[in-house]
Length: 286
View 1: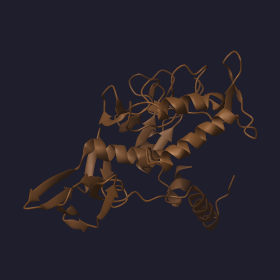
View 2 (view 1 turned 30 degrees about the horizontal axis):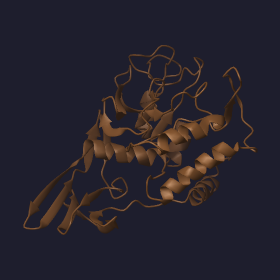
View 3 (view 1 turned 30 degrees about the vertical axis):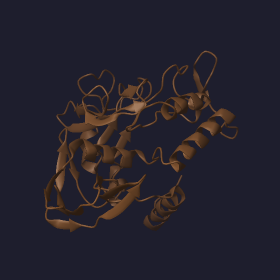
View 4 (view 1 turned 90 degrees about the vertical axis):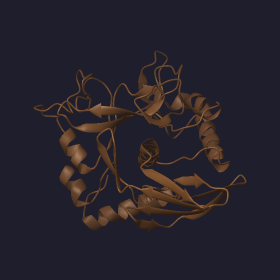
């Protein structure tokens, strides 16, 4: 599996796996009990290979929040999106927290998606939120998980997704992929730049690489998407290790910003690109 990913130049940034005590391949650390993904000598040990592949962010069993819909770009604080992780093999990695919601009978599922979304969308908060949800599950009266009929999605769930879409259209939130969200949060946590100002001329100097909890990141035009600086009238130039960056001027609610715009992506186009790549490589599809 790792060779197939490497041969197709696929570098998944996010590792997420949890479940019952039979899911022993999960990554744990010092708090681990049944998890063996970071335990040298186990037949399920893989953290060294997974990190070498390029994976940086790991969702681990205890890392969910119930009453904080949006988390701060910081690490190891009560409201942080990130938690520093260290495998039992000495390999560093970044853990991230997901928003589960509170008072959800038996846990997040398709039949309580609307409750979870309301907690996220209709409160006074801002920050980063990775939604912890099981869209293919509903809960029985005794709170046990069962397979959901996704051909007959509850009206409440559809309304919740409509609310999410409307909030994005109003500019209140940005819906994106987990990897892009976490990359941006890592950038804003580490802040790998310094700013100088001289007679109305502002210069921003980015480091080519930065480190967060022992995990290395690279600054480039893609990873810096979404970075902006509020500047009423000053001229701004930016550099990565002395190489100039192309910046854009952005007007938002009467304010002037300079930065690197967030490039929108269409999920249909992405899926088509992935399908074409697999066909060209001769890989089988499921």
